[in-house]
Image (cartoon, rainbow, N blue to C red):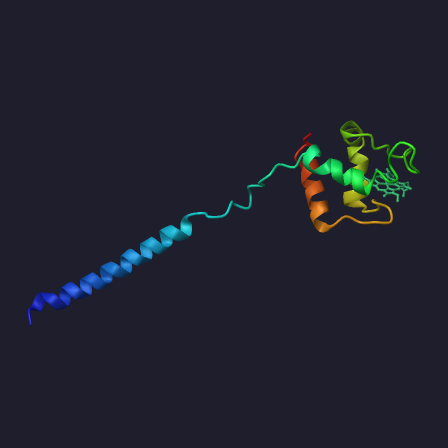
Length: 120
Ligand code: HEC
């Protein structure tokens, strides 16, 4: 039996192990899902906040409604003007929406929308 064959086989095996390792690691580095810090879709008034205020607040805080004198929801400008009071009532004190609540996802999205500068 030739002497080199055993060495060749051992080297070949080592080479294959190294090759499969480096291939595996390279595949692991490749991101196949967006990084968590990538927020994906940008939240705006039109695609998110408007519906939330309309559905959860306007029942009491719209023209002609019971709490219109306190916060009168008439669109984007009325939210921006009252943003500090809204943040305090909804996100900090959690006293609004009165008699209801926002889901954890809604609270998170609303927080992000405010923090991102209330995009229209
Ligand atoms: C069922 C009726 C009702 C709903 C729904 C409701 N509110 Fe109110 N809201 C009130 C009443 C009544 C007051 C005044 C008494 C109080 O502060 O508890 C008030 C007070 C407020 C205030 C003033 C708080 C302060 O002291 O500065 C803000 C801001 C506000 N609401 C925002 C909202 C927002 C935003 C929503 C939706 C997420 C909402 N409210 C949903 C009835 C409601």
